Each structure stands twice: as structure tokens, then as C-alpha cells.
Amino acid sequence: MTAPTDFTIAGARAALDARRISAVELTRAHLDAVEQLNPRLNAYITITPEVALAQAAAADAAIARGEAGPLSGIPLAIKDLFCTAGIRTTAASRILGDFVPPYESTVTTKLLQDGAVFLGKANLDEFAMGSSNLSSAFGGVENPWKRAGAPETVLVPGGSSGGSAAAVAARLALGATATDTGGSIRQPAAFCGVTGIKPTYGRCSRYGIIAYASSLDQAGPVARTVEDCAILLRSMSGFDPKDSTSANRAVPDFAAAVARGVKGLRIGIPREYRVEGLSPEIDALWQQGMDWLKAEGAELVEISLPHTRHALATYYIVAPAEASSNLARYDGVRFGLREDGKDLKDLYERSRAAGFGAEVKRRILVGTYVLSAGYYDAYYVKAQQVRALIKRDFDQAWEKVDAILTPATPTAAFGRDETQDDPVAMYLNDVFTITANLAGIPGMALPAGLDAQGLPLGLQILGRPFDEETLFAIGGAIERAADFKATPAVRAAA
Amino acid sequence: MSLDTATVRRVASLARLRVEEQDLPRLETELNGILGWIEQLQAVDTTGVEPMAGGGAESLRMREDQVTDGGQQQAVLANAPDRADAFFAVPKVVE
Image (tube, rainbow over all chains, first blue to last red; front, side):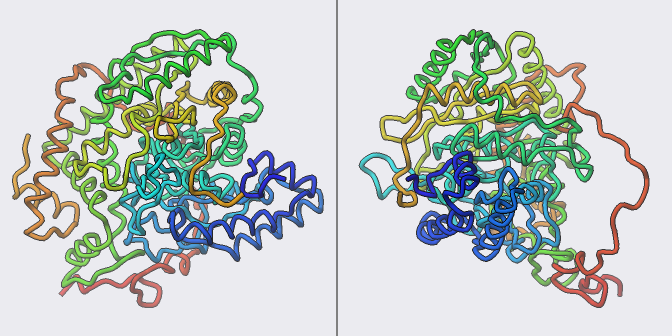
């Protein structure tokens, strides 16, 4: 029999409904795994066993009554950026170290309505700013994967949703919520050998998600299969009057698209994504992905996205500008950390200096500068114009193709001690993922192979706005062709 | 465009971030590295391009101008670092 922690969400649903396992047993198996491995991996900031077991008992009762929801009894990790009523929510920052939200985010409300069990709050880069999880005030997350022959080398899980991706990879949850502002779902999914999707901007409500860059932030799921991501995304999506940018559109049955196939689809291959520094193994995997889709009846079309090379610089104006505005609310007065000062301004300055980490401060300062009098047009308006050109590149591509295939990241996971001190070098991790946020389009990353050192490598699929179903169809085809069965060195015992 | 120490100090003050004098040179170097790199955008021809604000293609909707929430005084104050009765408390701001 499958170990409970090795279930897919779809498999666990079938087992729960057939009473082969109870929700309490499934939850307890995950809590045991978390207790055993989290001290090492640090994938969770907060673990909530009592809440989880109560939710599991309620799920068992619902199943017994024949009233099971799509996620009844499914144990999940919740990125600690989603407000959870009565449960500490930190954004991995000292400034929110003791913050207990009095309200629940819309996405987690929907998951609870569908019966999900919340094991705890997953670690992340502070305020979701980072690509390594090393900026968390609660310590970095260890990637459960190891290079062959180097079990001592600690690799990063990627970021910012590194705790979510590591928890799912190590079997410390069947799935997780995550958020993606420049690649924060897709890059950690690729580094940890799991699947993640950032849906179209507006698909999931941002209400109750601690804001980083509001015009780029989107929630999405991380799970171990394409179908599991489809199941979670359906529960997480939907119109919400509490988010002014929430899209009032029907939510399709994403899971039904997974088996659809790719016959006749036109897949774009953007020539600008052959960037300098791309690992030869990732280049080869990209070619492999093209061959798989061609063999399944898709047509490959070379396309051009000429403004891609300016996407990172555009992002690093737009995102810090929005962050400097969003993070102005942390003032030491209404909630969060306070450091006393001689007057109100001194209190603000001391509280914010003590509460924010180095990367957050850097981005607040960059954002404040590009929005300041005299520089607003030269930096911020210019970046908004280039953003419009990046979006236009995609709009033109959709006239020729149905979706786009790219690598997910330029390299496999790197070592905790191999990270660059140069912030700009660190930003290059997001070179393939960042355009989707700027253009507001959906993107999926999924594992497609291993490198020579045994680390997972991911492919990315980009699609038209609100056409996540095509991503699920292509992801399903790649998943079947890749038949990715490798598991990380550190995981719950089978 | 390059930032000098005085500008970094001014931006930090605008951002309400206390920065110690000894940290200014490091921040100056880091910020100039980032700003020097994003300078590349000046080379892009954006003549006549409408700036893209917001992430969605759909226009923001209007709603009725009516109260939809409220009466949450205790919830609003629940995380206050310091409070006096039903108010947030701060150091004296008016002499």
C-alpha cells in the first residue's frame, strides 16, 4: 500500500472516499513527518497540529455523511503570506513576528470551504522578496534534494515559496499554497522537482495575502502532479468583491484539461530565451521538451519576444516601487513590531529598521528613489512603458501560437554557500519567469528531468490570459512523456 | 545617474528607515549597482507607448458607495503594540 505521505491529492481523495484511510490517519502521518523532518528542513515557520487534527476529524465526519468537498481531509501547507484567522502570519519578517490576523484570506477561506486540512504556515523569503529563501527572518529552508555524492552540501529550495515547494517535495504536505510576483512559485517548484502554476493575474483573489507588488502578485498552488495543481487551483480561484482586481469569470474544471492532449496546438519557442549562462543540460532538456510535444502532435513555431531582455530591469523598478508603497503600512503603530523613539518619526524609523531585513530595505529604498520627485518619469513611467511593450510582445505571439515553452530556470538549485552577494546576479534567477508577471499571463513549471548531479530541472509553459486549461493540457503531456519518478534524498519515510 | 551619500540619506528618511552612518557607504554601493543596471531601460524606444499600470487587462469595476463592513473595533486594535482604551497610542506629537 502507498505510504500516506506519498499519495497524490487525487489518489488521497479516492482512498478517503473509499475509506481505505481516514483523514485523521492521513493528517497524523503528515504531522509525524513534519515533526521528524522540519527541524532540519525548516519548511514550516509555524506548525498547527491541533487545528489540523480538528479539521481532519471534521473532514472524516463530512465524508461519513456523504458530504465530502473536493479537498475534504487533504493536508496542505499554507505559505506564511496568507492571513489565517487566529494563526500567526509572519511573511517571514521580524516586523510581523507576532502578528495574529483577525481575518482569513479569500484563498484559504475557499480551501477551508472545500474541506482542506492546514498543517501549518510555510517558510518564504521575507515579504516574498527573494529567490533562495535565505532572506527569511526565521532562517533558510533546506532543499530536500542533494547532489549525487554530496549529502552534506545544503542547496537552496528557491524562493520565495521555498517552504511550500520543499514541504511538498519532502512529503511534508500533499500540496501547498504559494504566491508568485516574479517567479516565486515556478522557480522553487523547478528547484525542488515539483509542479507549480501561477495563474492569470486576477484569477485568485489577493484579499488577505500580504502585499508585495500588487500589480504582479498572484496566488497559485504547488503540488506533485499537474492534476493535483489543477484540483487545488480550482478551489483557490474565483471572483471576490473584496479584491478590486479579481476577475469576474467562471472557473473551469482545470483537471478535465490534463488529459486533453496537445494535438494541433501551436507551441512557440522564443529565441530570446537562449540566454547567456543557460546550463547546457537545461538547453538539452528544453529541446527534449520540444521533441515530446512534437511527437504528441503539436506544431513548434519559432517566435520572438524582443523586449524579454529588458524584463528584469523593468521588474526591479515596478516591484520595488509598489513594495515601497505597500510596506509603508508597517509603522510600529497599528500592528507589528515597535521600537520606541523620541518622537513619532523616530519611532517609525527605528521600528522599520529593526523589523525589516536587508533585502526588504534595499527594495524599499530603490522603490522610494524611483518614485521620488524628479525621478518618477525617468524610472517609473519608463518602466511602465517597457512593461507595456513586453505585454505587446506576448499579445503578438498569441496571433501565431497557443502557448510558449521555455526552461523554468537558467540553472538547477544552487548551494546555500554559493549564493551571490551581488543582488543583481541573484535577480537573474527569475529571467525566464518574470515576463509572465509583467504581462499578467499564466505560467506553469514542472519537473522534466535530472541533471548529471541528480538535481531536478524544470520546464515552463506560458499561455494566454485565462487559458490555464491549455497549460494543464501541455503540462499533462510533458508529465506523461517525462515520467519523472525521482524523489529527493530527504523525504518522509515510505 | 548615480546616488551620493546625501541622496541615500534623504531617500532613507523619505522611506522612514533609520540607517546608521556607517551603513551608508555599503548601501550607496548596492543601490548604485542596482540603479546602474536598470539604467539600460533608457535605451528602449518608448515613444508614444501608453504606460501599463496594473496587472490585469480588465478595467477596474465600480461599486455602490455603501458601507459593507464595520463595527470591528476590537479586531482592528487586537494587534496594536500600544493602545489606550479604543485608540492606538503613540509618543506625544503635539506639545
